[in-house]
Length: 125
Image 1: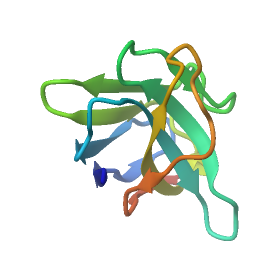
Image 2: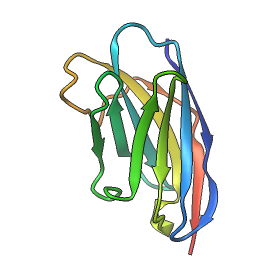
Image 3: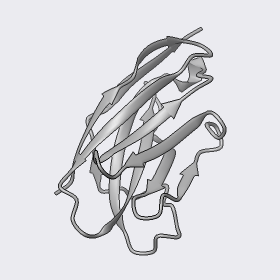
Image 4: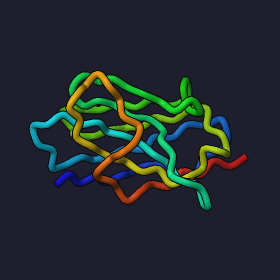
């Protein structure tokens, strides 16, 4: 059973930067995709970024490409999402997610199994 605990986030003005971090525990020897998703009030939860734990392959939503960077730290068992050039439309509850993968060459954007509780990111205009 994988456990995910988010931290970070907060309030920032438009154009600023924030980082959210996900502490991961309970992983087995399987390979995992680690994803970040976000959900604004009244909206569906959307894919933001993902990384393959074994080879570091990444994937991003078009709306955040060039502004957000996902990374993982094997020693600390954490997955970070560094966000820059933030816009008011980035305001949302950000969730960390995980799923087991079989083919590491593919970065999945859906069907994640385990989820964290979420971290709030608010961008003021």
